[in-house]
Image (tube, rainbow, N blue to C red; front, top):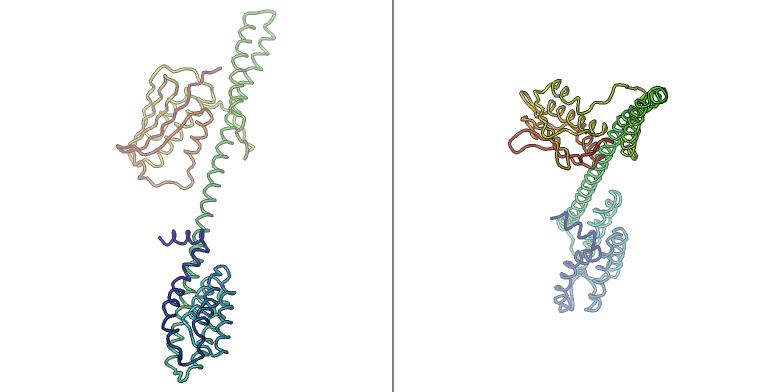
Amino acid sequence: MFGRVRAWSRRHEKLAGGLRVAPLAGLCAILAVPFVINTSPDGGQYVGAAGYLLLSALLLAPLLWQNRPLAAFSAISLICFGQWLADVDLLPANLSVLVALWAVAYQCSFRWALAAGLVAELGMFMALVSWDTPTFGMFFSGSIFVITIWLTGLYANTRRRYLEGLEERAERAERERDQQARMAAAAERARIARELHDVVAHNVSVMVVQADGAGFAMDSDPEQARQAVRTISKTGRAALAEMRRLVGVLRENEHGDTDYTPQPGLAQLEELVRGSAVPTRLRVAGVPSELPEGQQLAIYRIVQEALTNTLKHGGPGVQAVVEIEYGGPDLVVRVTDDGRGAASPQSPDGHGLIGMRERVGMYGGAVSAGPRSGGGFEVLARLPMVKAA
């Protein structure tokens, strides 16, 4: 509630300033009647109804300067000092000096707050001296009142700075989180780019070998040369398709190590399942169709990452099931387990889901991961069926 009030005050500064002055202005209006009726007050010069209204307006007007607390306190103090010199009786509007004191303690540094507090104490002492019989008890009571208001402003200032510090740290943490997510996405794109580069390089190598073979067999075996040319055409289309997907993928953080091992695909899924440290079953539904090597690699990495998460977070005795569903416009990859699911501790450095989304997003698919209603965890990916060129 206080946060909403503070936000509303920031949006409507002038209206909020008027509402802050309204209670004191109302008090001055209520006490105007007895002040005007009493034509011979004790302790000072009588200024009459017009003087009462004019002096009250002069004392209350600086309180509207919300963004200039020092100027408001100085103006009110000078008016009070002139009132003391003229020996004018104290008015209810003189309480505005305490309101301005609180504003200085709330908005300004400690040295200005201390100076304002000393000025307020001096003003109270001068007001007591102008009376006929000032006592130590009166001075002590007035000092307690002034010091209480001053300390309240200091506490509010400390609280405001503390909340501003919390908001700044929260914003910084949010920026760092977004930056880490962008860095993780960039790293995954670089990794995917390297893998796709290997796929395209393999296709180009096949094309070169087939072209050399066709050149040697063109005269001696024309049929073999035509078969080699068809292979070159098919492989070239596949390479072009992968190159189109490679456009826009960032390549950074390259390392000098080079791995010439062929990239895995759907043919290696069974081997991956058998070699998993988690007891896993593989189910294939529908008629398998030939897919581009890049898409096969994406499916392989999704299953690999899902099984790795099962091993890390599933708990003891966990089992997993890998399901590949062909048919229809999408290829469905589902990896489920019966482990602890969302109850497992989450690693702050894990970016597996980010990598899955990057891989599937390259082919226009979608992936989701979350706990299952009956227990365990599920990773579900859908990729549009793309025929190999």
